[in-house]
Image (tube, rainbow, N blue to C red; front, top):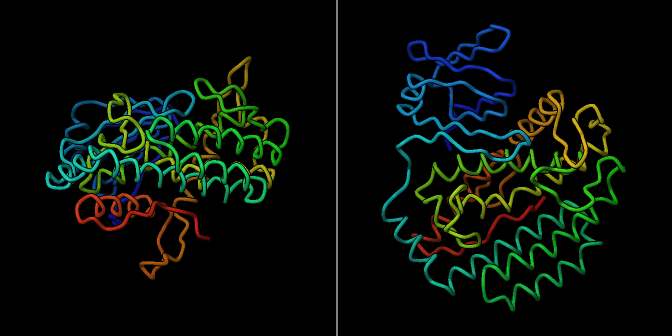
Amino acid sequence: MPAASRTYWLTTACRIRRQDQSLVIVRESGDKVFIPVTDVRDIVALSPVDINTSVIALLNQHRINVHFLGHYGDYAGSLLTSETSTSGETVIAQARLAGDTAASLEIARSLVLATAFNVRRVVDRELLQAPFATLKESVRSAETAAQLMGAEGTFRRSAWQVLDTRLPDWLRLDGRQRRPPRNAGNAFISYVNGIVYARVLTAVRLTPLHTGIAFLHSTMERQRHSLVLDLAELFKPLFAERLLLRMAGRDQLKPHHFDSDVNHAMLSEAGRRLVVQTVRDELATTIQHRALGRRVTYDELLYLEALRLARHCLEGDEYKPFRIWW
């Protein structure tokens, strides 16, 4: 994964302009930040951004993607460059595998089980032991991706109930609500999940895989990238639920970090800054990789996961989805 450049996070409304081979971030206050384009891997915009064709041309030239998150932190879309690392040979192999019902279902099963494993690891291994055992039985008997997703949804509901027992009253989810999030806990989860999706999209586009050919989610998904949805599920517990529990336990989250009204809530500006900085720090955290024998960042784990799937599609290497091992 390229290490010379980095991700830039835009947490306040701004304009992006071009000056020679640099990007100029113009804040509402009039302050300007000059960034050499060679220092940018991608951009995540968490507030409204004004951009012109001159900037788009420069971004496209340097293969820099811009990801946009909406009002509540949900993924709104991306400005993707025309050039990708996609390989025709890999895409054909990926499509062939996705079209093989038995092989595709086996990958989908492994994704569901690995995701649930990670949720259980983060939330509570003991209290989720029985729901996890039930999920494994359901996964074993499932004959379609829809049945797998239904079984995963049942497990998730159990996990959210257990999660609530470890949170203060004002941060409890009281059931998962997304569009819009109905309370502070749901607002936090949605916001971090949106960031995870954007990071996984960047990672997948650095590999030969096609983002629209999936194994668990429908390949007919039009508004989002199906394969990214598949892989993002694995990492959401590592960031969303895990950070919610940690920040709540350390009393880092306060009511003023959220703007709440009847039946909807969102992070306040102060809340967005806090959460984004926390996620950025987490992405930069390193862990000793058991197979590579070196330390890798959490951010690199996303890229390595996509590469592992690419090798499975192209070379037939066994695919074991990411499971938290530490």
